Amino acid sequence: MKKLTAQQKTDLLATLKQRFEKNKHRHPTLDWNYVEEKLKNNSSKLWSLQQMETTSGEPDVIAYNQDADEYTFCDCAAESPKGRRSWCYDRKALNDRKEHKPAQNVIDAAKEMGVKLLNEEEYKALQMIETFDKKTSSWIETPEEIRQLGGALFADFRYNHVFVYHNGASSYYASRGFRALLNV
Image 1 (spheres, rainbow, N blue to C red):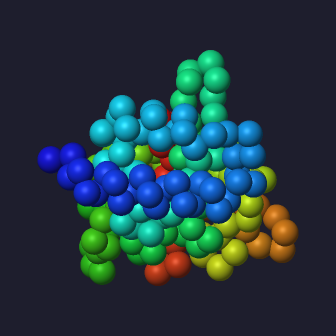
Image 2 (image 1 turned 90 degrees about the vertical axis):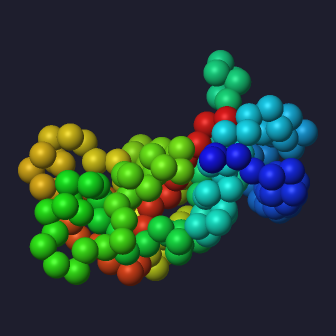
């Protein structure tokens, strides 16, 4: 069941408010009261934010789309979320591994959490707000033509630059997870 208890909602909103207020540089023109109102009226999105929080993503607001009246939350943990590392890219990659299979894959995990994997443009935009993944890397949404050839993309921040790399989709590393994005 994708629902939070009243206490879980209260605790999550308090955590999100504290992070929001502590990191105004991510959303200098936004007001928490409006964000909170949107969250209180959307329990399924709150559940997804809870999933981001419990997997060490530290979600925070990074944008507001006035036309859609949506706030964009993204994982803002300094490094790729600890609770989502050591997974291969997708179900096909997981099924193709003959031995040493990881516990999960990022595409299925994101879907189960009700969130979206960042694409290359979104990842680079996030890095313009603040630098992330200085020691880790994060899988990013991979174009179908690359995925059909067996590859998948990941990104990180090194040498004051955002790098986008490729790997076999079935690979996984203790320092690679994924960052989630959620519009509310």
